[in-house]
Image (cartoon, rainbow, N blue to C red; front, side, top):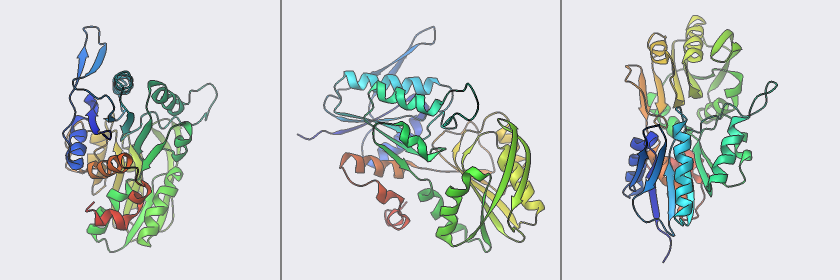
Length: 318
């Protein structure tokens, strides 16, 4: 008898995990997180997983209980004799700590990779890492899905007349260039300088935006400050409209207020992180279908790279 697939969710990504399981064609597995009065918690699988492919869905956004919960679930699955344990992490927390860019700092994304492996994960499926080279921090396979499979069909249906793409910072240029190339569209760069984390000192636009419908592309929207400032600057330079597409809606601090008060037509995000509140300017696209296909392909030992080809994704109805 071949191993069966069982999909479980941590408490932080329950809604997305239910969508993924539904798209896959399975029921979400039963797991309970027992909590103690001092804040300690213990995940318990309420069904047998011996000899099964176990997919654990949990984004590791704040609070860090989400990461610890995932690690404990991996450990529990290993001790329950699961055949393979795959960590499905739509948003990989600590991904902005991918290098030693100043003295005496940790490389958080490497530490998280080490913890996942030590806990017993056999594979990781994630989306839009802040830096693609984080895959090299792992000694186990990493399937790095691309949100362009979600965003490209959305941009196509907008049918913008003077479409131009913008990178909100130099670090986003490769990601934005790939999408711009697909549409055979121009690209501009908003070059920013920070005083410190989450605080922009200055920003300039490199490229012509007069009369253009601008689409900003980024992987993370944290405080919303970069997008709001970039959108305002682009409009001041003569842009016709500005909207932003970001994969992971961290949206911390006053982010919702910042986005609402900006000149952005809309902010389109994925459901890798659940929204804390509703906003008239924020639209959510689901990644459930994409992860469901990735899970099926991983189980059936099929290529994951096919998911990056837009023509194939479109034929699957994504």
